[in-house]
Image (cartoon, rainbow over all chains, first blue to last red; front, side):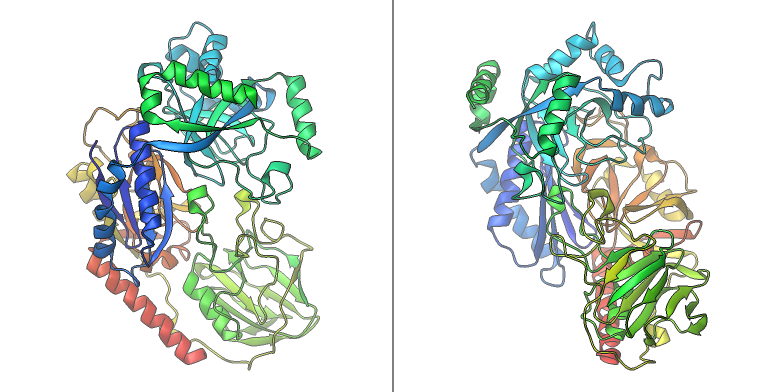
Length: 291
Length: 323
């Protein structure tokens, strides 16, 4: 892991902790971005953590770019020795896989896909060496995921699966991005899953859709009354496959303001997770099932 | 007092100076693409510089007024009419109750800013009235304005007619437009030759140019330094592990068409970025029409900071004239 620093124009400093994705890189980048926040450096206007990198926006009229760079570099050592541990939550997200809406959309944009002959899931299953779509979906939802970044558009989470690297699923993005993606589509690109918080353009493969809103600017959804964005980095997600009937039922509950996502408070400790992934995930699941 | 929208124009939105502070959640700063033009429009009608205005792109709206109000239009060049009678740009004028403000064809720049005394007084969202349509946030019900909308306006006294920004303080794009760039971010991914080409080629603004970003075409395809792609990045050599994007950053998906992210930027993604347009030139991008030839000009940090200081000095001069 080699931390790389760069200016992004005259108002940003970009720090790439590692060029490849890992939870270690995520934790260092999160710790460093936290350290920058806690340092309360005059002139800093935004701090955006990402999967294995983060960015600081500053006002160069208040602090000179080279002084800003020096302040951030000072904090690297502190972050590397920080505990890789988070008090967080695990959330169950219902997913209707192979739903009619993402299917209609993926058929509409077939000429932009690597394999126009099948669906996105057919393609993803095949290139990851699964015999069937069902087996691929099983691998996708059976182990939990870690929100390693929030962004792209309003409140969209990027998720990284909590499994060994050799078990990570990998899928390229569309050859050319779609101009349309249904709201709350569960997508996949590179080694990341995502939930499209709003309808719009997108390049990730489409696997299904969740009836659970994760962004509500009106703040009418019962669990989004405090803030319009649901996810934050460090959240853990467990997908729960549902059928059409359950999808419709949850949708109605959301509309009536009666839906409450299943959530449990948990501790995530990277060292403990790395030492025994299966056991650690089983404990996470236990906490969720008790909620 | 309300503005009644008779015709909305092409994509007219309420904008102020934006909502910094939520980019880490994917909610961009937003606000006027040409911030100096918005500030000037507000100063002309006696508003605080950050009051909400209408930003109209390529085509002006048609608006009737329910009370007397001071108006100023800045930014691109577009004939301005009150009940069919011409008015000057960058200059305050009065529109009386029942009169109609309309516009002719755009002849220069891309965006106009329409300020009314008192400012547009819709409900702010996350501290700003700027419209972010993707997130249905701010503006008028989270969207661009539409026919029949009645936009509330704050109460304020009228100002004198004929207050004007001197011509030398109205900055427009030259031709070819020059956008100054600080290289960095993932610049090292490009071969030396492709890096040189980026600055020596003449690009043109593509039709896909909006508040999220401006796309450019016409330059040579880029080549990448060979490497084994890092885990999680994706197979294309232009892919990276999804990281943060900054305002002004230049990504080149597939190495073909550069995209400069603007005020409604996506906050992150999986394409390499080769650097960023300097902050002093961001306003300029908002005034570029499709098909405009553009040269990217490489500068160093000290030049970027000097350009920023020059820009600030220009704003100070406008303030001295008007406030």
